[in-house]
Length: 240
Image 1 (cartoon, helix red, strand yellow):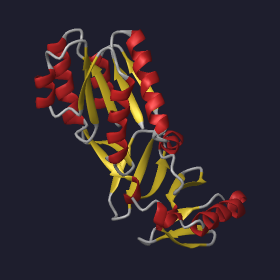
Image 2 (cartoon, rainbow, N blue to C red; image 1 turned 180 degrees about the vertical axis):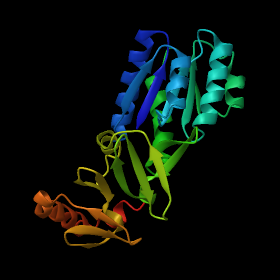
Image 3 (cartoon, rainbow, N blue to C red; image 1 turned 60 degrees about the vertical axis):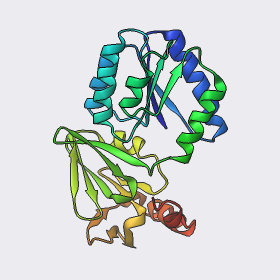
Image 4 (cartoon, one colour; image 1 turned 135 degrees about the vertical axis):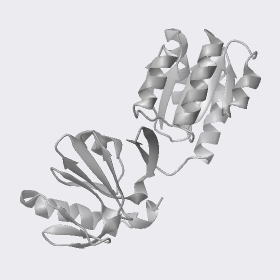
């Protein structure tokens, strides 16, 4: 789970990250954190496609401006958990009017954060890749991706239904983000969802009729990885 914590207090940022880390560890959920001290910087990063699963946004300084940023983030990432923090409950009503998932009063209490992360684990959404498409952010579920193709300075995300998204990112970066057992880097230019493969010889043939190249000097290893995957029954385990 990717978390963004925005707070002008470096001490409070570190404390919240530590308490969240302990709570998520008890839920067996892996967490990565990005820190911000300026809510406008956070909003800008999200607008440029830096999607996160949860945002903790502090209202202590400039609460009216931060609430406007919170409203903008809610529109940009409608499926993301947005949690407001403050030293007072003064703006709790305004926060909940935005549809936030929580309002935390400082100092933080570990048991309150544990209950919050319990809700995260109960409502965990299917894994998605967030892409910027015509100035909008789109969450693409992993199971809808057939393969990813690198072309010069961009990548094409090919969907199982024949659609595609074009993103100006490197394949290495997308491979790191798509850290999921179903995806196999089979070629310098291709990352394939093994759930979509129906035939393998010197290349992969997919269920939609398309083919994906295999790095020939590593053909044996790549085919073995694919066989290991289907023998583990992962097609069922990772269907969402």
